[in-house]
Length: 214
Image (cartoon, rainbow, N blue to C red; front, side, top):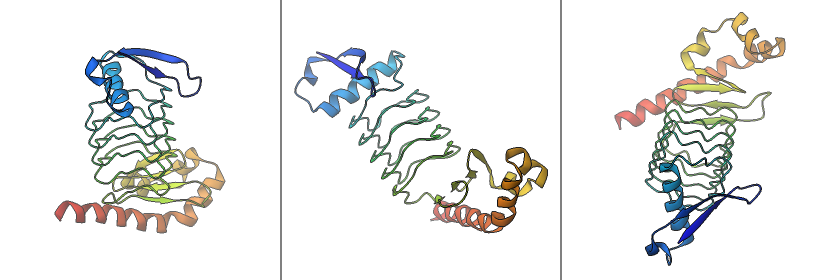
């Protein structure tokens, strides 16, 4: 049986994947997940793909290019997504529990209500990532909104606006370096907020150490 993978915006067919006849009576989520894994193995371009509700639990999608893909409500629990490009992907309500997201690019991705408990976000790029109401149990991640720029603090990094750096790098930046990132408004913001932001960094780092020794 042939299973089409569509463009999320135009609804045009990106590719048609030949599935074994045993998939004919399986749920669409399983069919779609199987088609995605085959497409990935064949290096088919899945950017902008409509992959809502796909069952990809445990799938190996290391370094996959899923830019702008719609993965809302998909099951990616335990999936290997290390180095994957998920820039601007829709991951609303997606199950990413226990997924490997090390070095994944989640810039501008939408992860509202996503399940991230136990996911490995080490060195993931989280610039402008929307984590509203996401399940971050065990992550030591703090999202701060309402400031001039959104702030995201993880055990390893702090992202302010589009600038993501390690805690130690932020502590070492002088006024000249801050001015290179932003104008005088940015320098004023830094002067007014850096001390309490560093307190959040200490919390995130301490949270991670507590989890590691538990």
